[in-house]
Image 1 (tube, rainbow, N blue to C red):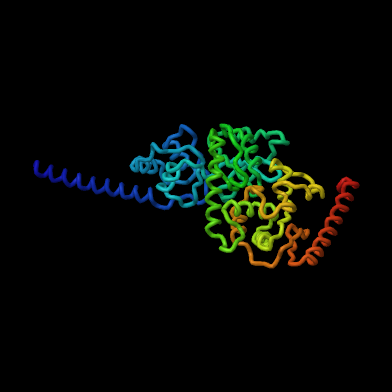
Image 2 (image 1 turned 120 degrees about the vertical axis):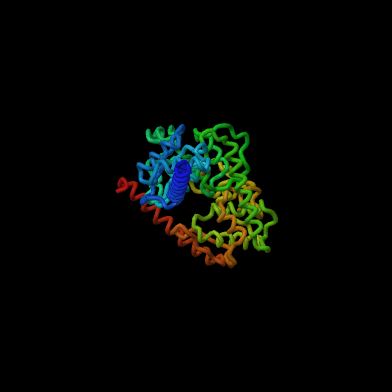
Length: 394
């Protein structure tokens, strides 16, 4: 009888182990299989939350087939304690294992609400925007200028949330002074900037920051990024350029940056300046004259006077020979590459053509005709503006 009972016990345990093994394999398959989510969601993980709350939220939103399997899998991988607070984009079909990886790996939010501080040529603006998971595009909720507008309540509410992302977007062509002044006004940053960074040494780009980040460290990050861009452009430069150092390349790129906002024109504009340098001609470019007046501290806000074009400053390329002593702004990657690899062209002149671009010329006579056309366009625009003003703009 005992032999019979023992035999039955062994059989029962074998069946039990087989069933347990099957359940484990099934659970593992469920954990790693494609998830049931059909439309992207933004998963909010609050500070102080835990994997049980997250698993319930995922189950309620249809992102996982079993909250229990999600938790067990996370525990098995020893990732439960690594849960990060933030807002995480979960794409359709994402497996439980992939979701666990997203919410425990780095802690950087990938969706939700974002505050963007935009440092532009003419103004600094603040934008509150939110990622629409369905389209994976940001939707603007409010934008304002801290210098002139009242701070919206939505901005105050958004910045007080723990999962809000913060970003600084620096435009091509802004000056180092403009960047420093803008950083001083970003209230989520801490610390002082002891010294204004050299002109041209900051890379125009988008930088994610966190509340409490040090302003000087943000500047250092921008400088490091620009050093890499300048180094890459210098290594890729044409061998016969009439420039001798990476700093010369940076100066030339900054002039190109300020002369045109049309991407397709950058290499052509650079070719004009390279041709002038090769022929021993003065560069005669207005943005350098303006920099000699403003020193990069804001915009001039008016046209240049004839006396200013004749006045000697270190940056007045109507007076000095060759390049000015420093960059006149912070150029971006495209302008650096345009300066390093300009077009091959016969042009030594260009002037605005009324479309936002420029008319290029090889001879002075052709250039003078282009200038005359531009003067007509200027006069017509002036007359139209005066007419609108006299009628209230109707």
